[in-house]
Image (cartoon, rainbow, N blue to C red):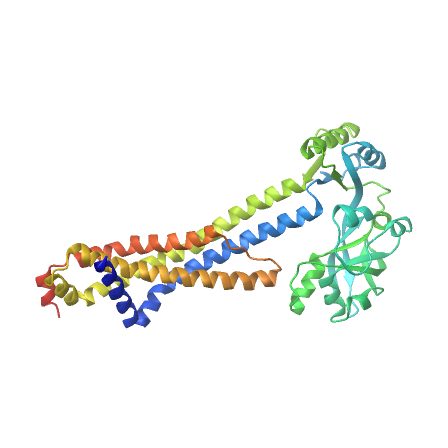
Length: 407
């Protein structure tokens, strides 16, 4: 135990005695561990964010879309009434999507996503968090009103720092199906986008965020005559979602004389898909970031070899005073382990700070787990042992007489 304590003291003295070299030795490990921890924390946080978003909406939600735009694939009122009549289904709404061109007061034009939906969708199935104004309602639907609900970041992009309350009631011009229409903003919904966006980023939000208008209005503008491209609904809690949605698909295929004409997605499937994709992406990026750990390990080995050469005479003196090969081996291994452990701890701090900063910008709460801490610690120890053992072995095998003759 005394020998181990002396080895640790000696290692600390050596590392503090050449701070510049110690920092350079740690650099690769420091960056590598930090990058991996940051990626893992952001990936885990994003997965939790997606799951919680769908949990808030309810896991019983499903969406059904026609796989082709042909007339025989289009969902009609009779289809919807049949689905609504199923005892397992709580609610069903119609929806259509389209692209439009938004014209700003400055004369700029942006492509935007238009979603024509029935009020139950934004109030029950996928509720919007309204910051100002109101949501779409049955009166808007019945009146084919030129009403629109926009995102908070779109409000900032179009009206700058004007308060949301003052933006409600403003008019915006959107061209849909070659028809320019003046829509009145009736509500502004909350998004998780960062509050500190540049002008360019705000403009991009216009093209990314959804503009919600009454289903009846979009149906009228597209001339669909009541046919539907997408429906959404909720399966009651007491029923198996997979069985119910399969049955709905069978009903639609039978009515339209199709074999497999409809795409059915549930929120559970979406969560599973997001999990799968994020796990693959996180693993891939982490693997790339881990290359710097290997590079850092090689750097540690090279510098330790240089250190052994510089300290040849010191090693000779220690052996002449009775130190065994094992004592010398342990001494240099401890030095390598201390370098990698300190680099690992600093890397964890770097990863934490980086993940929190990026997560704050993206509106995602980065998550840190015990597994990440264990990963960083075990990785540091492993690299210290793997890349430190060869220089330590070289030091241990030095002949004391030859070592004492060294300059």
